[in-house]
Length: 316
Image 1 (cartoon, rainbow, N blue to C red):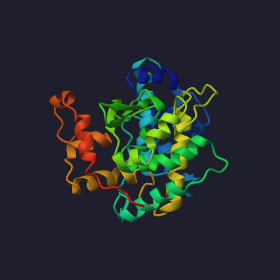
Image 2: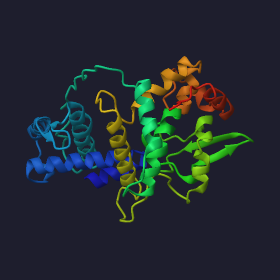
Image 3: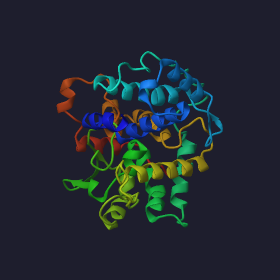
Image 4: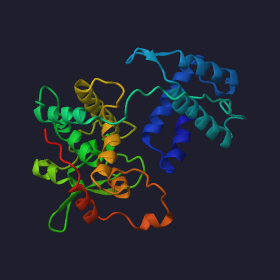
């Protein structure tokens, strides 16, 4: 059922990460039931599974699985796959239909964004990072990806999946990156061009890219023919390494170790006098109050470069 659902879901451009999440949820459901016969699944089974998952301790954190994960991954996965089965004549009814869970909003004791001191501490550590026994791509990621996130507000995966061919020059002086789902994945499924902050250029990022071999800069595609593709697994791995690196510098779990940059980028830019629309385009946020016409009128690279020239430098 999972594979049948995925054939249609992939055609609708759903992310491979969704396939992985729903596959894991279905595997956990089968383990809970002790069988894989869909004709025997009842609504009570799904409710029992929901309660079981809420009581399950995650080995990595030592804490119960969050209600949000159970709702958005487990229940959503079961509903989607069983819904496909009903639509395709493989089940009479969807036993997960109507079963939900209200995920309470967690307490937040601080801003989601890095403070100035936290941001500078991570960036300073990236300049001091030394290569140990890790792959050169991992070393390069720790050196450059925090700075890229700091000056673009981009998602960590968007920067970690960059390739040599994603760096371009516009006119005589504007260097920019193309963030594209061709590299691995982009949440919006839309490519965008992002101008480089002048500090990144002065620090040698362009020279680093030009000297790199063809292909991905910060990860090494796997050779094992993974069904998710050769890059998705390594991408998740490098995101984890970057999170561990940042968490070693900023241990406060009230701020996400990678996403803290995304929450910081826009407020800093607004204070510097950059308009929100330009900041949204650079960071890849959904445009506020977007209209159909917005799809035809982006923020040009010249406008991005002028805006980023005003964005404060991180002097560390």
